[in-house]
Length: 175
Picture (tube, one colour):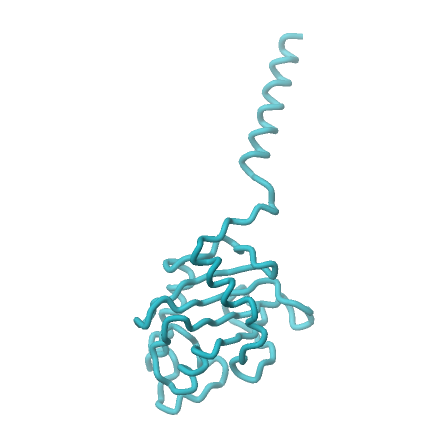
């Protein structure tokens, strides 16, 4: 009987620890104040201009998803004028779809320009309810910074992927 109580106690403790350690899958990381501010500024992103023709395009990155990218007026001015770097307040929102047939995006990747300095971006990912996705939020998100460094010539934005003619021979990767 004593062995059964001990065994029951061990099993019950393991179960409680596994629930606490794993957490609830619905628990989202809390957004920082900065992330909240960018989410608020991007809330109407669907009214912004899209890069390229606005159709979904296959993405070699971003999980191999299909993507559509929106740019606020400040970002579009920079792209149109080819006057890099982007100004503080420029915002880009990339809708990510698991397939071309999906009706709505599964993830939003957002770039918010922190200052007028080259490469000074704040990186975020959100689900469609504007909850932080995958813990991606901050100015030092390695996977974002490392990949986008290849587009140094256009302030870390791959404008050539959208068929935007740079006119100056700069294709977004410094070449």
